[in-house]
Amino acid sequence: MAACNAQMKDLEVIHSYLDSQASRCFNLLYERYSGKVYAKCLTLLGNTALAEDATQEIFTKIFLNLARFNEKSKFSTWLYSITYNFCIDYIRRKKKEKAIFSDDIERAPDLAADDIPDKEMLELNLAQLEQVLGSLNPGDRAILLMKYQDGEQIKDIAKQFGKSESAIKMQIKRAKERARKIRAKSFPDELNTDAYEQQAQSLRGNAK
Amino acid sequence: MSNKPNPFEEMQNRQIRTFFDGDADRKIKAGLDSRMGTFRLLGSIADVYLNRLVDTMVGMANGAAETAEQEEQPEQSRLKLGDHPRTGNKYPNL
Image (cartoon, rainbow over all chains, first blue to last red; front, side):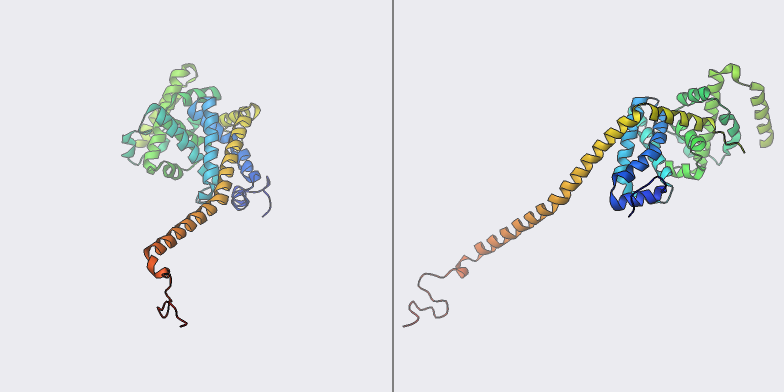
């Protein structure tokens, strides 16, 4: 089998690695994804030293379990789900919190997630976004990254967390509400409250 | 349609730049290489010695079984001094 090269797709690299065990192939996967894994760890854990340790642990897991990758999803999706789970488990162990999501999420009705429009999240500037994400709980942070950074579908997020789609929609809705509150509190001058009020009124009107 | 990254992607891009510009990448890579080396070494040791260990254990088990068999039937396997195995005479040619 040919040695791995930068033009190969992820799956080709993985097959080549599993056939040859060549370090070059694993290094290629590391070069492609280490930055993104580190960035997610940094956002979720909020500390560079922890993010570095977590990145190393996650790639060790990948090295040991690559043969178990069943190709039902993209490699990146599989890798990111390991990343999110690792970081959330770490935070849970540290804080001794059993549940990242509250119980009422499990009983959530089938709600539309778009009560607060995506535009509002996507209009944040970098400083606002970092402030908002830093103040949210890890579950909210992870779910917003999955939706707005990775562009994942609700059903895929639900699969990763082992939750129902309606529970995930509810979680996203609440995360956005909390993000809005944090933004309003941290950046009161930049918030256009009239626009929000208009939006809220139009949503109430739609609901009727 | 605009190709401008959204703020989440922008934040990720900035964190990735910091990762590669600083020494985080180098440190993680070095740690990972060391771990992978250790795992590979352990794998090679297991490959080479596990078969031998199994062979040795099987050999030992067989040896023990044979010894046990011999100990169970000591009279049949040995002739008494002066006994011929077929005739039972002390001097079979006479």
